[in-house]
Image 1 (cartoon, rainbow, N blue to C red):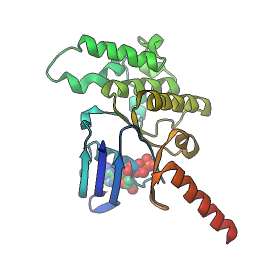
Image 2: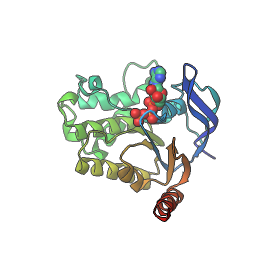
Image 3: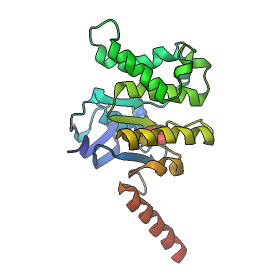
Image 4: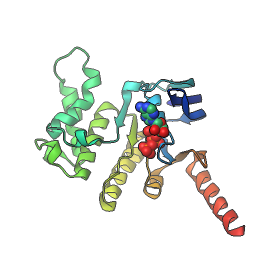
Length: 233
Ligand SMILES: Nc1ncnc2c1ncn2[C@@H]1O[C@H](COP(=O)(O)OP(=O)(O)OP(=O)(O)O)[C@@H](O)[C@H]1O
């Protein structure tokens, strides 16, 4: 059973459609890379799958025990977020917030989860540091640890390596691959860094021209065939 299914999904803003009739199925252990030009509708699709953007038509169905609040979401960072005056531990802890309900404090299990997430992301030593004083790569690790506190199942990442240098990006992809391979976390990532992002991916969705949805192996075959066509012609 799929964790997330989109059927005939169309999305837009004020009468303008950005995505039309999309069919998609994401299952446990998939690593889906979403590609497309600026403005193609990638972030809008991610928000719609999280229930944060209204559908124009079609359906988004969550299954296999996944609810929207079980999805860890690492959004594109704005300058205001980068400048947030909180400690690393506070930011990571806020990943548990959706489970707090009316409780005023985090429980022992949640605090243990926060500590584990920081260990796994290699940022435990930064716990008391102020978030806005960290480097871009450290900040992304903090946000990934935060997203991990929200989920053990599914991670959504919107352009997570934007602004990071190639070495730090590589480390970040390695962290994601470890979560994917060793812990079976489903990963859905939007990226403009096609080469880096495709490395660990199992599936590709390309929105716009050319559009594609399928396994990475089939995507690479399509690309090779297109290139062959170009040289033949
Ligand atoms: N709040 C909004 N109101 C109106 N139009 C919007 C709004 N947000 C996005 N759009 C438009 O919808 C289209 C899709 O935007 P979206 O952010 O989903 O694209 P994207 O593929 O994620 O782009 P990028 O790669 O630049 O992040 C764009 O043309 C954008 O201008």
